[in-house]
Image (spheres, rainbow, N blue to C red):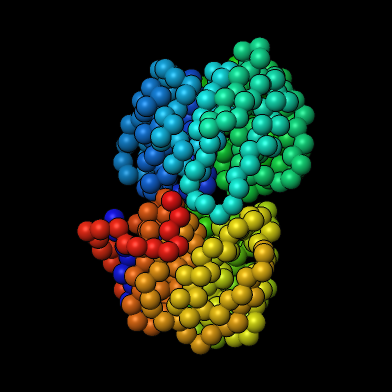
Length: 430
């Protein structure tokens, strides 16, 4: 067990390089199961969710060869099972992508229900709707069993009753080897959906329209392999932007796609933070007091739900009263109790948080309850006076590569401390 010890009150200054996108990597790596050949994937983030997927693929019979810290070669020609390890799959939220990949390639799959962060029920009804429309029979229980009735899926017209990133990506994977044309209407448009489509096309698929409301996938007989580089992580970049806003100082954030950052940049500009963009960098500076703002999370290109906890921390230090409305998940304010331990003044009513800005936060022992909430509490610790001890950091390491090292390099006083015994936590979520 480890915790982060943060001595706050130090403005950030310098440069930070953003890693490959976690939300893209956890779809692209299982999508390698569709490839009847060798694929090389670069700009892979060095995070625990990715390591777990490598273990799952290896257990299924794939050959996974790390070329360096951020590049991997995957050969799925020797897959011997369509039933991933129950113990491994249940530990990761994105395990449901194994369903679409295995079902599309082999006509059947049995996968544990997804785990990962706990901030609400994770229904897969839209995934099942898509698979069923393409000719699969799906049985749900402790795990999900799907079988293509005729051995291979067929194309279909699929309307998503609500915008769903996971269902859009899963149906895309299932459709690339199906007979005929699959059309997904009301598709999600997040950057990592476009990245998955570009990866599949680089391997030999025929996917058009990713990033729009309608995605068309014409099935091909096989994916033959190739090379692909994952896009930079929008949420990691946004997290460092929020850290500068909360602590003050100035950061040059490298390896970003500014277009992907506009939904975050615009809100920080409204709050009085300076954001200047170049080709693949953002210069973020905060020298003046933060101003109140209202934020509502929405599907892309709206403000991302994965940035909601981080922006809430920033608003807790802004002048005046702000409101944050969660428009995607039902239960994403669990971290607010921990933030209040540091002195934040926040009241939550359902999906709405009302934030009364305070002059400062004060360090205290706190616990992360999920990935993005954990990152937000790191930001709070960096902005607080005194010492903050943050536990349950395994959540953070699911999605942030070397966050402690990157923050230390730009002036943060933060270290990893090994614990002899697990800390007692009222807010621990197993």
